[in-house]
Length: 350
Image (cartoon, rainbow, N blue to C red; front, side, top):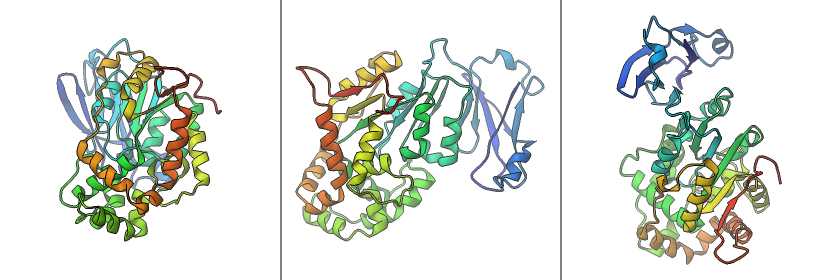
């Protein structure tokens, strides 16, 4: 028998689960089990969020070796039986630092784990916490653009964090490019929460000329606070703050570096081969399965224009300091050593 519960975003929503296996969908079922604790905590109107699968529902339940259960609405994976006897026996978080997620990389990594949840920021803080609290599962892969201080405790509970960092100017170029595009078209990998937070920035950058330094300068100088919150030193924010609106200062750089020192693998996208190698060693699987998206020349050109703008330097001040010290710490100590941190003792604080 399989038993669980699914709390939807809407207080009065009626959740449903989609049951499937390797051959396709089996059924969609409403959650019809009352969870009184959910009512008592005010998390759902009637508490009808529980589900139960047994042989009366699926007669050959025990033989369904590839059984999966998803939230029918969002597609969130709730349960998956181990697909292979060689699952990776680790709990891993890949902290995403870019607005553009590494979808193929997450797919190739996640398929080696019993449970996977990519782009977890789409589902909100409570769902992310639930994923981290899956104590009965020893093989978990989570990825997402999280404010990491909210989840720091899980580094002491067996989770190993990997992160691929990028040049601050390139990331700013990517953000401006995507936000300008968002103003004109739907971007599938932005969740509802992202869309709310990013909408003001998308509107502000809708008419910016990416080929003009003057246009970029004017857009950055006139950016109101809710737009600046999206653009100002995003990696320092991720590592040093707990809420999206929190501002960062130079003192937060040390906090960010201290948290980064606890990660299992840290790499730069300019040395992606070595990042792949370090992740492959950590997970014990082939590095050939890790496709990383190369840098785009158009974004490199925008980044070059941004480097000439003092306003861009001011907006990225904390990230530029952070980037400098991390690169210095990761410089090869001898010829041909990779620019990647592989920290076997990352679960303890340094």
